Image (cartoon, rainbow, N blue to C red; front, side, top):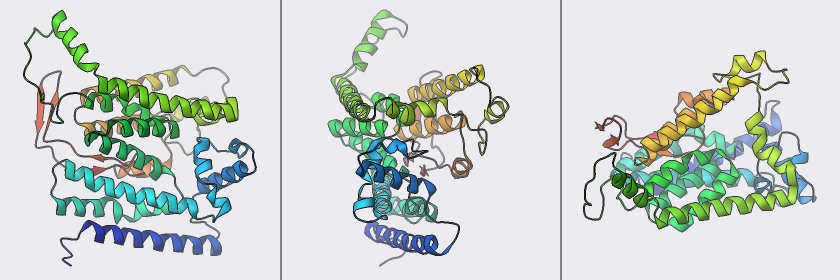
Length: 372
């Protein structure tokens, strides 16, 4: 075996070994030390799963702010072994590594370089391994988002649509990726060149030009994507609402909209929230926070939608920057260009920006990896 040119199987096997060692060490530390290795949220997940097995609401567990689907998935923690959930998160973590490698190959990177980058940035990264083995569920969402992108790029649109709807139900914030994903779904190739012959040119501000743009945008593929992803999202939400009524909406979605953290918060809005934490009135400046956050991710997704990975990268970075809550964990992850969704951002060799017609060529950096 050439250590400088390892195969993906070799790198993945080493990644599995690293995670097994971390899991074993975590069990030992939990049993022998006051400071636990396992993430406190994992105990919350397990307690919620226990409540589900008893026929009770997972929201009876304080601080459970997630979809009941996660509690259902982790019921084997109660029936089989408490480490089941960690193994599930590790499998999703390894799937993310596989998808990163596949996406790098789709972007034209050589196989050897793709494997090395995947190993260096994800599979053999001890920080990534620690996150999933401590019981953080973000690897599940990262795998869903990456698999959605992979299926779109490989033309499996129905599967991608359904999985995207599930991922938005799982956590609401991936809805910001809808714009670049929808822009990608058209009859152009992924370099932005039309596959069919050139149409008659019209002046940019003429009615004929915009009529044609709208007609070209509203394609059957986009309509199916919207109906399928939206349909599965609303079906899942309706079922959870049937089971847990208003409690589901309040804890899973509305809590994150109204949340005010005045401690351990490093967001731009921290001091304003701190000074007005006990105020019973509406805080007007937090309305600007929502406007800046949603406005920036919408604009960036629209402008860079054709370069899907770069678009998702800048969208997520802007989303975190203007978020009203930014914990120390998120700040640490951001310092490594990492947070949340687990996707690869690989700027293409040319990104056309419609306003100004600027083209950025030979962009520096082949791989930026968003970590959980």
